[in-house]
Length: 244
Image (cartoon, rainbow, N blue to C red):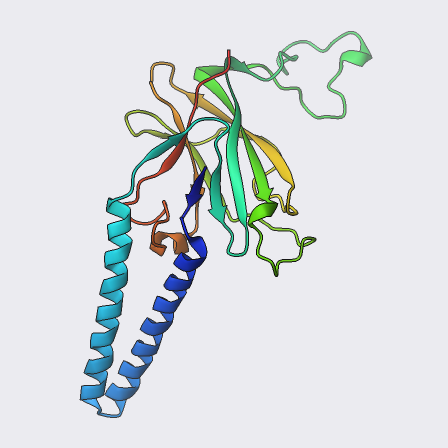
């Protein structure tokens, strides 16, 4: 399993404490400068620079020394939600040249039998052919009840943070899903509950080593020490090997 980031509560507390110190220092600088206490303003500014530089050093140091990892389907990738953790894994990968059932096109003549009409479901879909290869990737989301804080109510649902899902090939090209099926990743869950979501990608047929990147899409995570979304940090991927 892989935690994003490790020691998440301490990381979040460190980030909040640093923001608090920098905020207080900024207020002191403004007040001291307005009241002509130049020395006090310079002292507060120097303290802010020291604290900020120390945090940036830790942030960049953790990023440049991080290792890229590729998890196999069945291995879990954990994300911290402050007082609990959500885990994700790839449960199934399938490849196909077509998408959707072969159904009657709107361009074909109307059927003679009324039972073969469009029906209440709206216009029928036609079978779509992939420009390359369709990849159907199933992701399982699990609210790991073992990671909840003692004070968190067990009947309190958790709404996951926004996630970014994409496929990356060996050349660094990024492919976003063309279709999402099943339960959305933002589905609120109780401790112990899980759900599955299927993502459909149209990927080039001649590109090797497709990997799935599932990460957070929050700007605050850019500044968390050890988080894969932080600047210059290596990523944790899932390998994508289609099931025959």
